[in-house]
Image (cartoon, rainbow, N blue to C red; front, top):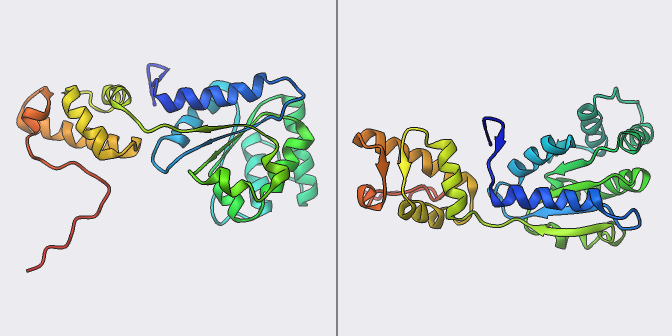
Length: 241
């Protein structure tokens, strides 16, 4: 999220940035893949997108339906390179581009590649190019990758994403609540209800601002909010007649 060209200083943006920086600045004899992981909704992809912009990294968000060839095709498309016909040729194209260009590669939704048992594609790209590679995955991705020892051993660092706190919520409110100020006591409640999820915090910030505007006030806290409900992500229970 940006405001006047400035990236919102959320904790997970900073963590993701440091993870990639470590791979980029490592001595050449150390492995060059790093993994940033955590539960869904904690802002990992958001952080990765901004890190990609900052470091001019190639960014690919994988899909569950992608084949091995589709993964390579997506990376080549991000690089702006016309793909060759065979998987072998496409792999060499990417390796050459990474090696010559020196830009990092960010692979988001790495769990899909693991589930497809296609992790060796990424290992081949790393082994051939030595380029820094940032992997983004869900909470269990370190455990999943233990099945591929040769891949697992090439990971320089495992960086866990952190749940959002009141400081993050305060920053987010500056971007999502342009017409109302939310006091810290209500922000604390929002954070607790969201259970660390940036996505749920943003939904609730929008809900609170809408309520404040409906009440005709410019500042809102627990006193004004009262006993109104916040969005937890859970579907409401059916009311029986």
